Picture 1: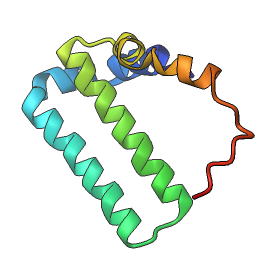
Picture 2: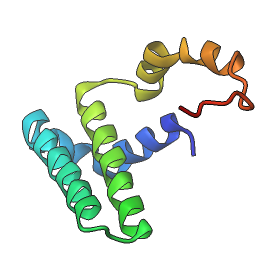
Picture 3: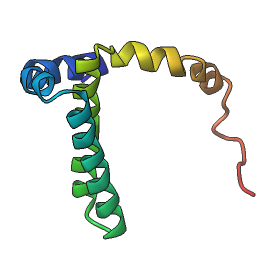
Picture 4: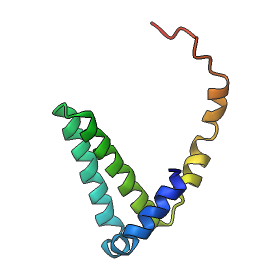
Length: 98
């Protein structure tokens, strides 16, 4: 699934509730999910739990972006597009050992 598709899915499923909740409370929900991920890492939880928490963080980020009217795909492309040049010049056979 593409980022744009995922953000649209979150909009279709949750926008009305997210908008009613507002930016501040939605941000607090996002922070709660980040806290759950931190606890899962500290407690050495399963890979599946880590996946779930990371997915929740992405979902809440998309929800927050929706109520802020931010297109995540556009924002990510604007911020990180120059990194593509680094990848095209990156040789995976380079020895990065210290």
